[in-house]
Length: 159
Image (cartoon, rainbow, N blue to C red; front, side, top):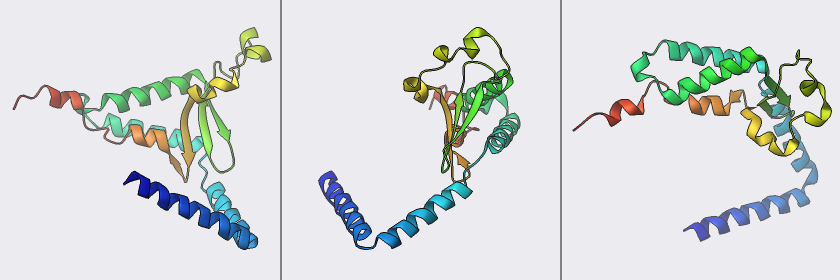
């Protein structure tokens, strides 16, 4: 089964490359339109803050015993990071990345200002908090998927 799926996708990719070579203007036009669409729907940091506040309000409306601990801990952690001032946004044009810095921008400690002590680029993926594209913050949305379902509540039930 997987071999046939692989063959199908391989054929599609080959046909796309072939069509792009045959009609380069058309391919460029479609690619440019798609990138412009993604750019127009690239969420900003204020949209992230608004989403975070909305999700916090959703969690507050749900009682403690039935709150999903994963959703609650994630939202609390993001709120704490915002209070510490270590949340940053990296705009890549078609997507945005919310990441966590070591220090607040207003901090003037030597550790915060020295360029040799900045977070290394190779560990940047560990600092990514959320990825935004198409007017959505994907990680925050996935953590809030079942915010009103507490799995531990069901594990104690005896049938």
